[in-house]
Image (cartoon, rainbow over all chains, first blue to last red; front, side, top):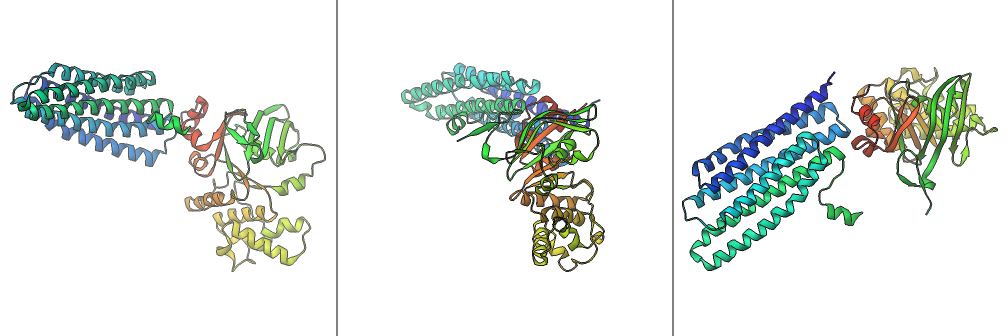
Length: 223
Length: 266
């Protein structure tokens, strides 16, 4: 027999996974919009943000109701708290994807800058992190979540490399300054998506194991 | 500084904080082995909640702490229950004196058919106290401690049976406090009360633990979470887990504890 709270928690999880699926699609489209200089796709990204915002509010409402009415404890409490945190991260990721799409629209009508492939490669790595973080949430796999946290340094490295290359290009090609600045901002948005995917993975570790691995260096020094 | 580790968890406490220490305690109702090897400590100025399904042994264990089980024929205790460094099951222990220092409040309020004043004064009188002024002081102080004074100060000499259920329970707490105990045992003290009266008892527990060591048996998970500093989970006469309440209710170590507190038991 499945008991009432378990059914409610499953509903909450399904809602979060649906929001994650929409978020994944929005990231994917924003990468393609940049890569293919596709303004139509970029507009689609901007339009889909409203649905994700709505889902975040729904998850907030479901979580609040469960906390108020069910008095959850232990793993149930951690699951609700973790899912609420994840929904906030998903909403922020969608905002970052929208920001990428806006930059892509500005860039699509201007001459192509070099390093586009490198930027796309970095974005694909951030997307892969996001997908693995969501998979860890879906399966409650703390080991997989920890492996996502380790992937973040690769994206950080690509971020530094791309920004450095674009700045060097900007110094040499002054007419490309505006395009370069937009591209640097776009690269920063990709780096933030990877950071937020790491946050999701950290929430999964909290939900499964009950330990907070956020800001580990702070806790290391405190203990 | 000396430290002591409990066996059921890896918590570390200062040894001087321990008020009661149950050491490999076994309890039998004739042939029925009701408690198995219970080892845990209770700390000064802390409330410890005992939780578990019906028949798990939590109330039996509570009654071991002031030897209330002695009143049941055929019962037997093995191991030790140490209060302030002395085993309360040692031969020669004055059980009346033990029950004065380890007071008890029961599930249903059980005031005597006497006045409010006489209910609270009862323990003092049976202990031979005759000083009227002292008795009046203790009655007032106990009623203030149990947060009942302002409600009854103008009708101290009316029958206690005219009080509401919640007031009667606080009167029983005042009666237990009048003889100046150090430990207060509470066996589901709010289970027969409405939510407002329950809230008052819970607030009272928060206040009382500043002066006393409290052990409370409760079937309400939320009550255990709200009022206790430490929680012990019992199942089939065994202590499964004991630890800080916030940890037990957010990250229990044992699966049986997790299943019980999340309602997935059985």
